[in-house]
Length: 311
Image 1 (cartoon, one colour):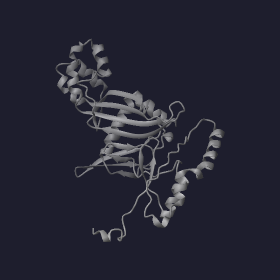
Image 2 (spheres, one colour):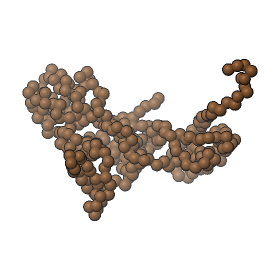
Image 3 (cartoon, one colour):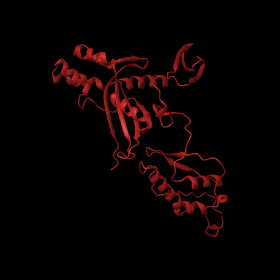
Image 4 (cartoon, helix red, strand yellow):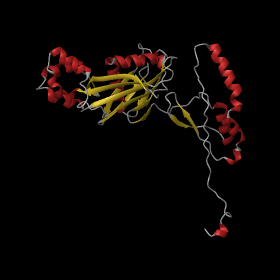
């Protein structure tokens, strides 16, 4: 641009500003309700002195085109927060709610391939005596499914039929994995907050180089099979695996807000066809453990339970 024109043209580019508070709050300081209430009152009295609230108060809504909020869930994941209303109303909403728990609407539980957001489910209302009838059928070669209400009328349709297979696989896993049962039990008892459930295919653990899973070590010991035969089994364990991860955060003073992970590895029994001739007894023992559903014939290959340590 010619030097004589520089500075004469108006800059129409929009400037953006990111405001992030570094104040830390403990939403669960202890079991004493009176003490917690006292701390909450102190926090509210100090809010006007928070630098970010001071900055928000000085912003002229007339000079702002958009306000975008960001919130973090209990697992520490950040996500976009949609705020309704005018720019002034959005700024006021952030001033009133920053550093507080806010309610959000989850459009659906199934958010990506094999990934379910579990935070919207009411685990504490779980009743093992309550059941719902699922009907699956085929029309012109196309599978469809729906759930019926107590009067056997359609309560809702299932748009993605693959969700039924995920549900059947998870139902099978609940029956055979005691570690997962314990994790889910904490959620139904209100002692843990569920986060996500993830089905991963293929799964990344390389059993050809790792240890022989406990389920096979038990079978080898029971049948007195030489450990030199372990490689025969290891060769097939990397095929047809499904990793199922359940993340949750226990609600306890001892664990703080650590992210706990329950990882289960299920293996398709069909993958063992190649060892049937070499190790027929092993094949037979695993066959007894496998369950058949529309999702396939699977058994529990491995299970882990622990927490994420950020230190």
